[in-house]
Image (tube, rainbow over all chains, first blue to last red; front, side, top):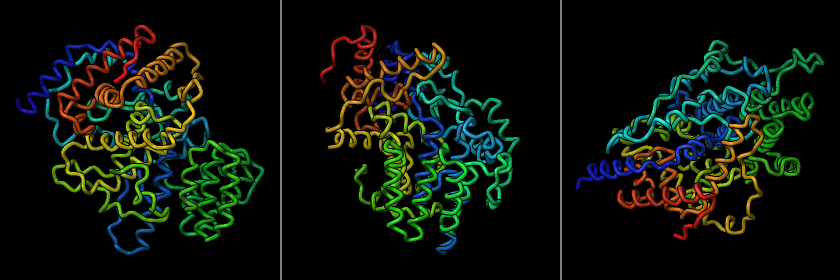
Length: 278
Length: 200
């Protein structure tokens, strides 16, 4: 029997044997990382110079252009991180969400595998599965997510079904797209309305690591001054350690990493810190 | 086999710049020429989900997903374009398998209950959903690794049988048998709330 025919027959047999596990499968599909976790992953890849936001790759062999591309990749990762950050964490982040979200929506079309032999899975009892997946809110990353990943809206599986168009949240974000901001250089002020947000400070700090790690460290210190218990304290410390490593201040980096370990023993960035100091 | 201990990955300097224009595109013209960023955006969360559903604890899932992504990024130029999802999930499955076999896992203290699901949801249906997830994850753990993997890839990730076959490196008939057996075991486990344990 040809492989395609064999697959078709076996799939038919599986379709006939309704699993009766629809609700449990639906729960497993909802077991996805939240936006902050994905942003942390993007950030960890960006630290390694691997951009995860769609950018125009640099074709230049020159090192400085590669550094710029890496910086752009890092900036893109930060943009992705910003996009994934929960709205409730920082209201200003809503307006600071960059156009990358639009790009994300535009490129979220399902990737169709080059070849999809075998029978379509339409005969599966997708009615119930589809109904479960109708709970999907693809723009969940735009909203403040509960900490329970199981409670987070499940994302659609890729390539099998079309992604639902994001509801108003993402569309609203698209109208708020703004040009990239200049580095935050305003002096500290007690006026909360004008002081830079956590995201702005750390975004600028991350952008500055490669070109001017000392400036990055200054921005990090300012973040610590303005937001000593900020929600992005872990990210601040990661950036600080990165900047110290870039400056060749290994002893200071080790000391700050030790402090990080004490302050955030279960941090998801633990391995990234170890990698930086390797 | 690429895995958590892969030296090439471990030796990557944090300041190494990877030229995406060359390294991030699948080589074969038969492929859809997805770039690494596209793969991350469209598959990243599902690969992470698969790791967790295959038994990787939440606190290790990000590290493992990073391993998967680094492997994908490094090997993407060599991807032959036959089946992107089969290839991606194959990497995911091997990383999860290596993790389970690692010494760290053998010494691991059992997770405190409840696992990373969390019950901070405020609505009864969300609480019920969280509890259902707990139960099915516990039931999945009772399956053999092969059956659990086949079930997760086919039922949850909705890969085709051919893609599952490629991901796990087993013939179609074997994959079919594993899925069928997994369904039977899970139905029993979840209907009676802890029936006979599968030993194979």
